[in-house]
Length: 531
Image (cartoon, rainbow, N blue to C red; front, side, top):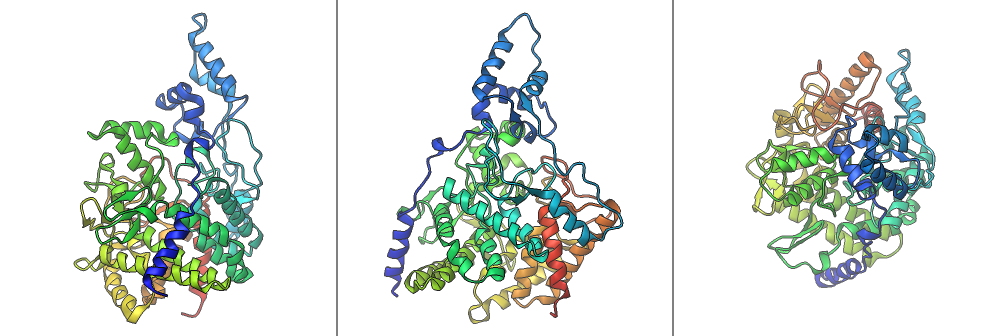
């Protein structure tokens, strides 16, 4: 098939995308509760801004707002917003907050128990609640995270597979397919305030993981949902001219198409309203620009990191939408190849070739724009500045998971990257997220389970088995150490000083914890295999 015909077929596929209008989506708490919402969040009524947006109203939003406005203007009573909220809302608690681990249990037995604690049954719709009801059971991360999260769920599923919890794996994938079919994409989480953005696109990896259990027909079962999600990520690509950008797609000067993180809104995030207002107030830029970058940073899952900061250290300089992330685009190489495999199984070889060609073209663009010859590592690319960001981060190992092994190229650059990993990212507890210490949670000294898994998988796949094994052993060893001391598995860990806990970010350290549980079980199983 000629390049011209491949391009025309892909253009036709992308032009057929159906976009769901934002004003037709369920309203988020800031839209429903207006000035009440603003008063609650700016007064910091609760230590965590997520508390109020997760509260369940006791009556309709219209009735609540009528009562609020009447109470505010009544001179005979002294209005208390705290009492008003407690009268009209049921505040959330964590279903796992009362759970106490059994110190006699091994870490693996503890995780098996936690699947029951973190499990949620199909939801019932409540008018005015921010929860987007899901039709099937699912696993939540734990702590303040009371809903399903997009990219978390793939890493949780790794552990569910090791636990042979195949039914709940399929339930979760069915929920994501439902979200795609209902809203046109997978939101950050099943909350109304997450609808304006997605997260790193791991849906295809979930489907492929289930296919290792149920066979290749799984690819056909979810092919329509996979195709719809891909169109979401590539919306507008078919009509972009070189040098233009639209939502999640950027056309570079050579007409290469790469992607970025994006959120449809440019207001403070409802769940972090006060924090976003304060960040924007510290910037000299228009506030809507700061909010857009903050939201895009949340869409990345790395909220927040020096990766997105113009000065590398100050959150108010955030510029996420100017950056082409190496991990996102590597994932999309994997996505395009997954679509190629699915269409091959479907017997549609010509369409399969289209997606194979798209993956090859994207890989070439990543190699051109994101490989730093000087640093011998993959980094993000700032397309506004037309320069690499030069940040050494664990995201730079994603290409090794998805790139094709053409003429030994991947093993050569993997050897170079392995040296950088050993010198700059490898720490006593595994891989540190970045080399920068900023106080943001996706920076040093923290390490995160999903990044350990992707690094181990990519390095092992590219011939760096010894380094992959070292990372896996250090990370699982740290998980075991903290579990022995606290009886908990944590959302993130301090990998540099094993005597200290992780910190930074907008909220306290959370335990539970979905993706840590999943990656621990998966890495432990991998380490037991003959290497």
